[in-house]
Length: 472
Image (cartoon, rainbow, N blue to C red; front, side, top):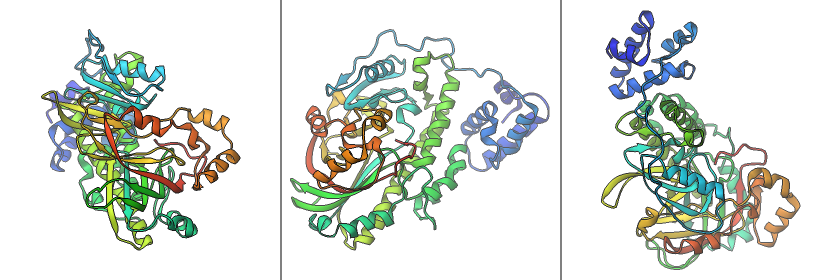
């Protein structure tokens, strides 16, 4: 990297400039593109402490911190423009029980100059930037907070050729299988560590992913906190799916994502996006974006890696449970949300963010859960264009976590579950069944988006123990 480029970024003349050029050269030799190196050096100048342990840029970061050098204001593509469109995009809404703040967040997103189209799913509620249940299409730009902090959170189901009555007849065995083969919570990890080929990929695509690789390996095959779960239940298949005939089956369903690594990737790149759009109004700052023709490419590569990592977590969980059950699966299905996709809509390529929304392209299979005491649905997408081929990712919260702690008690939760034949192994009060919307009302509100193929009813449920900080 040339000295004049580093001076333009904000590096001062002298030894630090030489260190920056040397580090840039090592990074290029290690396989990083010139664009990636420039992005790292800009980010390092703003937040040198983040790179203190980086094998390539650590010495440079330490010198910047030691000398207390402040960066110049970096040039921003939109430094002189209004961050609102002249005319607001309209967005279509499914469902009635959606709070006003979620609508305001969706209106904010649809006023961005990069926005092309939007939709709001029936499970929608307030999130950071884009509401949970929000779908937003943009042009050549990705919004890290519109993807979410739990990148590529997903559902996975394994169906066995076993009668679901076994869950009641031998509940202690199946409860033991969940207890022994899952780990939940913010600091959960396996010892010894589990293996999956995702750990053999190149995690140096970003300094952030390189930094979290060891954490990712420790947490591989574990589940998060909040609304994440693994549960055995009864699947009522109404019609043939991938060769499996209609009937009643024992199945296991999981919900979790990219754990601590995904959170760190989201947080770091969100801060980076906000630093590039420092003039955005306060109410829009969580909608700061990265240009995919520039340093957004690095976030995109990290996001996709987190997607493969999230999938690996589920496959390890299901692999272990399958081995413990001792029966080969008839069927396995997974789908994810909290992601961005390159898709063609109205004849143009756009970036579709689905934050707490499920892809529902024509004939695409997906899973939409309810609560620990209400059904999940295996669905087929109908490819509705006005929803950007999307559907809800669940029932959606109707009560905040703080309100749930204040208003719920364990005796009433346990009685409610017992009356419905559900065994709860662990969870927090903030996941009580009634903090969620009625899943059947949500499904009725999106009957033009998906078609139910099967109904899954939870019977043995494991979630993160009470007191854990939510990751969802």
